[in-house]
Figure 1 (cartoon, rainbow, N blue to C red):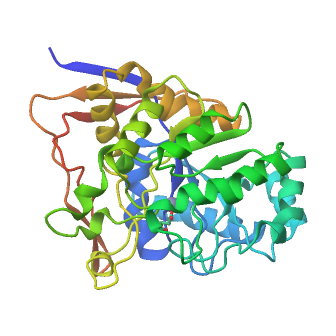
Figure 2 (figure 1 turned 120 degrees about the horizontal axis):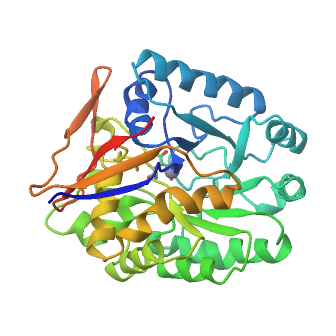
Figure 3 (figure 1 turned 30 degrees about the horizontal axis):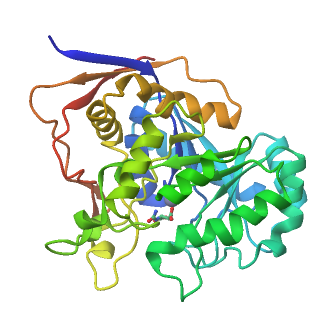
Length: 353
Ligand code: NCD
Ligand code: ZN
């Protein structure tokens, strides 16, 4: 008999949809499975004001329509925190229901982060206002000091920036985005309130050998970079545990293939299409299918103080591995779809209206 699993419809708490042709090309894949998504603001130029967020949200809705997507999908907008950000604008955007969170990129940490923050001191008034108004801060948790090894950047960020900030402003609710290390997992677990973390599907299935042994695989290059196997295992333990502080953020981040298969390839994995199959396989392999709903559909709304979705998703386990498109078109270019590197037997069978 076919094994089935029905869960509340999941949400994606960290998603890059881009703009223009790319937005139109990728938005349907997320809308097909996820009811809501936290939309990252690292466009060029970034989404920095309430007005920008209103306009970008409108473009996402238009792209949903023009791409022929009929699934219900709500983009939850964010603002990109800069050293010029006006606290009043952030508070207004949240009060008007335009944004769900603010994103902090350390300047230079990742794709399109040049307008990010060089020092927490410079954005302290905004963070204080956010704490006072219960606005969530999403953090890209990597230090950017050139002397810090890329594999250590999350740990050093936690020790040098995040931990002091937690002490200074404990009321500020923070999501450590795409946590990738056991150090990050342990840090989040040690926080009794006000702290959560998203975990990506690719960090749950890959270690750095998958990226670097036998040839360099540019489509596995993302930031924070894929770490050692022991860290992957710590992430799987966190995701499959009952711990409400960990939830799904795909970090689906499309780039055209030519910009990744390049002498200086850019960071980001496009996984929106097969995230749910990947997750179901990870949870199945960990004998934790009963925890998938918590991770993908319950813990995120709990942290963001939102209701869980009414709609349901049914996943089905097949005898043969599921196949996916290897790439999707984006205008005259294409985007390579994440290859989980192992057979996945679970497919999304249906999503109720
Ligand atoms: C993201 C992107 O391409 O926008 N890239 C990535 O490797 N994850 C940015 C980010 O989330 O760091
Ligand atoms: Zn991201």
